[in-house]
Structure formats: structure tokens, C-alpha cells
Image (cartoon, rainbow, N blue to C red; front, side, top):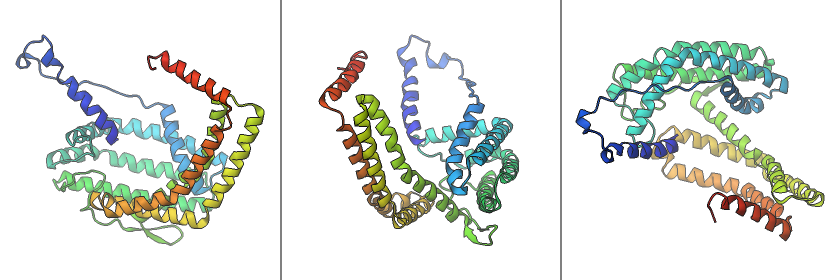
Length: 349
């Protein structure tokens, strides 16, 4: 989001200079500017896209089968359409206020002062009953599609998410009373009371923020582990780019199998445990703000993460180089010529 703002702000600044170069009357005689009504539809296709993103996390976490994933995806899409339809008037104004505060903070995270914070909190207040019903109704319907063991884990996760929503609601109540705090960030405030431990259905207790950090770390670990899965896609693209023959494709598949076996040897249980622990610490450090996250602790955790990921990254680089080397000089020249001709047609030599 920050990078989007950094691109948009200069454009707005440039547009603001246009009257100075035009033959329009002086600014003093111009009519007062009025807000321009813009809108964006939230379509069923967009709801399905959000659901697919959630399912990428939920499927491995709860070990959903294909039938369960399909049913749960349909539930989430339908419920998401309902909650956005109900909360749209308030939600759109919240987005508008966050954009304004971000622009005023040079495109960085939104920062609110006392007055703008009170207005933001008042706008957010009607959303909490809507979100509460969304959590309750959606989780109840999803639970019906799960086995008992899946439901136990899911219920604990929902409990943690509800605690997070409760903390946000209590923060907005303080903001509405003028207690905005120095950072003025609606999504993180160091003056918040500590989130209470959540008692999970299995009787275990765990701090909400630790549970969230673990969930994020697991998702990040799954993403790392999927790196080798993308190699098949690279082989297919290279085969099309260089127009591999059957013999070259056979060699490519052999290289793919070999590299996947080597990747499995890298991703030992010990490696996964180290990556998981690093990401948990990183995610918790992010909650402590820039002094920690962007200081020595954040740097050290980042370096450790790079060291852990380097063997897989180097293996991926080796795989791609070996696949590219399967193309003979004629195929390489033909591929370069196709790219050169494409660029030349668009004025690039």
C-alpha cells in the first residue's frame, strides 16, 4: 500500500500545477471544489478471489479435502458479499479517511490526530455489530463442513480473531473520547492493553498475538516450501520460449526431478523449525514498532532469514540456468529475435 501511495502522490501534485499554466481566471474567482463521487463495484468474482486467498491458508492448516474447500469457499464468498453490502456506506468513508491521512503522512501508514481520530472512530462504530454477525454466522456455517478435529482448531483460531476485533473496537471507543495516542494508527497502538490469552477448545491457553504470529509464520513457511512447485511452471515457460523438442523436455523433467529431491533434502524438519521460529519472532517484532522492527533486532532476524533461504534460492537459480542451457544456439537466437522484434515494434531497439 505504501508504494501505491508513493506513486499516486506525485501524480496528484503534478495535476495541481495545471491551472498555473492554463488561461483560466485567477484561482480566487474559481468556484469552490466539491467532492467527486467515485465508486467501485464489489463483484462475486472479486469475492471468489478473496475466498481463494483465504483457502490457500485454510486448506493446509485444517487439512481440508477438495469437497470441504469448495463448500467453505462458497460460504465465504456469499458471506463476504453480504457483509460488504451491509457495511459499504461506512466502509467507504473509512477508506477515504485512511487515504487522506496517508497522503498527509507522505504516503506512509495513516496517522491520525485527536480530531481526525475521533471522526474515524465515530465512522467505524456502526461496523462492529456487522462484523460481529459476520464472524458468528460465517464461522458457524463453516464449522458444519468440518470434522471434529478440524473444528477444534478452527474454533480456537476464530476465538483469537474475535479478541483482535475486540481490541480494535475498544481502541476506537478510546479514540471517540479523544484518547488517540501519539502514533495515531488505527491498527496498532502501543498503549493498548495486552491482549488476554485465549483458551482454546483443547484447554490450552496462548497469547492472542503469539497465536497470530504462529499462524502467519506457518503461512510463510508454506510459501517457502512451495518454491520448488513453481519450477514446473518455469520449465513449461522455457519450453515454449525456446520451443524445446521431446528430448529436451525429457532432460528438463529429469533436471526438475533431481532439483526437487535436493530441495526436499534442504527442507528438513530442523530447517522448517528454524524458519518457523525466525518468522514467529519477526512477526512479533513487527508489533513493537519501527524502533525494534527496523532496528538491530529486525536486521538480525532478516539476515537469519536470508541465510536460511539461501540454499533454496541458489538451487532455484541453478535449476533455471540448467533449463536455459538445454536450448541450442539456434533456439536461443530465434528466441532472442522474437523478443527483439516485439520490442522494435514498440520503439525499443
